Length: 325
Image (tube, rainbow, N blue to C red):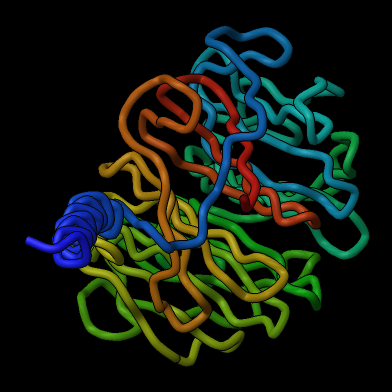
């Protein structure tokens, strides 16, 4: 065989090896999200306990316009709101177990109005379903009562405030609806009934609003997200039960970034999923565990002005922060 022929044969075999290596590395990478937008771990804080910067059952989280972070924590030993800087430095806390102004039985959903006032949903106390505070925890107002009527609640859960300072509260259980109030607690409208059709709910959990005042609801019992306008008119939905991209097992809370992308905590799959505003899947991250970037029943989620994602890692008693990479 000539030198030229030998060289061609060696090159052909080398190309074969290169292609084989590419195929064996690229295919698994694609199966695990190769080419998708990536998020990297930034920091974490928290541990189990009832003191400052400790948690017993952290539930929801919200980041204000100054990138301060507020976390609701619920157990018989820790019914309170804790406020941190965006790197986890403890600032203040307020609340304790009880019924009445500034007291909580099960503080959950939390958000802010344009003046920086803080609204907290207390799903264990329909008679104080929503409480309003200054950003330093001074009590301002509360509203709600137990029942099936307008403005009443069975289990007030998720809460969001739109750009016009209207307050939306999810009510799971027998009511299975969303109620909309002005910032003083006057009922404006409500929508939803129990069921699986568009605009119906089985245990609506987290709620979020975007810059156009569209409302996104985690319809937990139906393993889906539903999107509405601010008057409750149905726009779209996405999600089914399962572990694939765009599927959920016990979805928890939803957040919206400045570009209208949505982020959903997928508790049963121990991950976060990101979608555009129409529900098209973008990326995901997380797995079960206690290492950085792993979760044990992630629940609350919020986005700051820099696009960093804050996740309440409930079962690991901590907050984890992620950033696009």
